[in-house]
Amino acid sequence: MRNVAKTIVTFSLGAIISNKDGTIDVKAISSIAQQFRSLLSYSKQIQITAVVGAGGLGRNYVEFARNHLRKGADLDSIAIRASRVNALLLASAVRNSLIVTNARIPESMVEVNHYLSDGFEVVVLGGIEPGMTSDSTAATIAQVHKGPLVIVSTVGGIFGDSRKEKGQSVILSKVDRSYLRRRIFSKVTEHVLDVKTSRILLKEQSKGMKVLVTGYPNILNATKNLLSIKDKETVIKGATRILV
Image 1: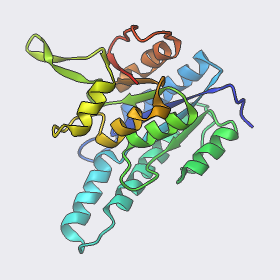
Image 2: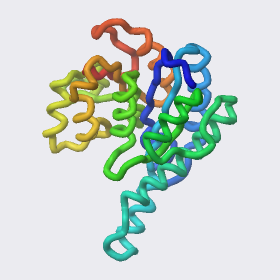
Image 3: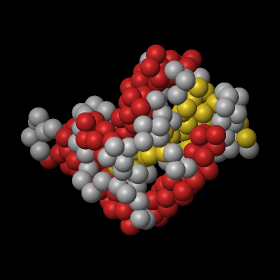
Image 4: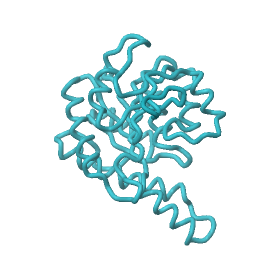
């Protein structure tokens, strides 16, 4: 059984390892695996769960099914299976970094918790339920375990339209629950924080969680800073804190 005092740090990796054209981002996979190893060396009191999205691979399969298969094709199941293929690739890279991780990709929360209870250092998974994104799946896991949540975005954070620097939007250092409530009713599509994830973070059970949005090159430093902060005012460079 794992040490119950350990902190479960949950990462949503979304489309990071599968490019828009469906190719695999080898550099990202290698970098993430190495940063996980460094993070585990930094603190012996954590375990990691990493939720991988379908990315470009999943989009290609879903688009094919939508255009060429008869109506009624189970698009959610196709996307979930694609995410599990991506997760298997990352799990293999993590294992090659001499980290104790799962050889089989879990298909339910029960399996995820089983691996954590068995003391696995990193548990990698793809989709679990239809209609759940990698962000909402990761937010659910983090909420259950009362641990930090790090959403790893291809854009590196949450951008604010009202703050400009040299003609470009800049990453917001912090957003709060009022921002999440606006996201639920907003018709604007964001790269991060889908409606379901925003709803999860607004629940009473999520209050007090440490939540961060950052980019994959910054996972190690941003997460170390997130683990060490004591108050809501601390800003983490190159990332957006979500104050829930």
